[in-house]
Length: 305
Image (cartoon, rainbow, N blue to C red; front, top):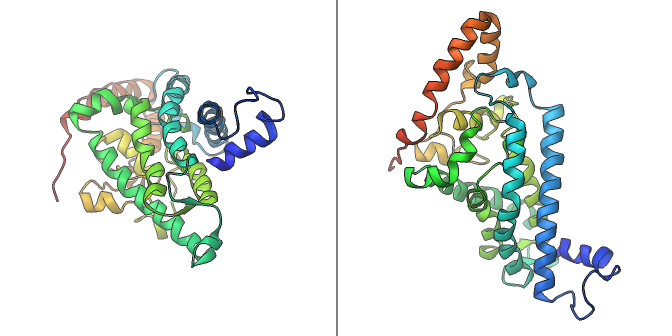
């Protein structure tokens, strides 16, 4: 994150004398304030750009007719996100400050490694697999009844999510699920450019698994945790906790083949309701809504494998 911090200082803050002259660019308080502003503004901007683009060009708008879509759901998703971002920002800045102050294993150039540029694919893959493993277990324990109702339940308000639900978390929930991304460079060497790129990628990926585009190439269907998998997580709660891959759900006994792959997904529900008429649609919606909340906490089961 010092790449961003240095750029903001060099091209904006220092030339315009935003801070007192006595505050050098490496003064910790100046860095903290700048990072907090960057995290909040940058996070909100990235959220609106990625979710907005996805909603306009990728999201299947027929899903807005699903009976489990809430009234004014998109507005609620956005408001929840905007409320959460500043609080997540406080916690995130703590991690960024530790990185900026030199306490991580982030490095500047691949020439510092014996493998050179050959480290790039290793860093990308190990980052994805390490964070996927950690997020799986963090996410799974967020479904423990003693934790779920306080931290994670808010994100499950959106039974059929839109791209704007991607960052609509309780702040502590959101931070905990992002923590592995920050922990990785404290455990393993990581190029600063790769870290920044992966951080942006993760935000786009988080939007993509909430975008209602359930199509996945057949060759990677068994391995990739996409929107179809994650939508079933929102609907059925105790399945498909993974972030990128299905590996840990399969190992942990929580894998569920997406209902969309079997012709019984949310889009199929909408199409069926469209053919049954208003009365059938209304009655089915009521029956489905009655099934939802009771399973949030009662069906929780941490299977020991």
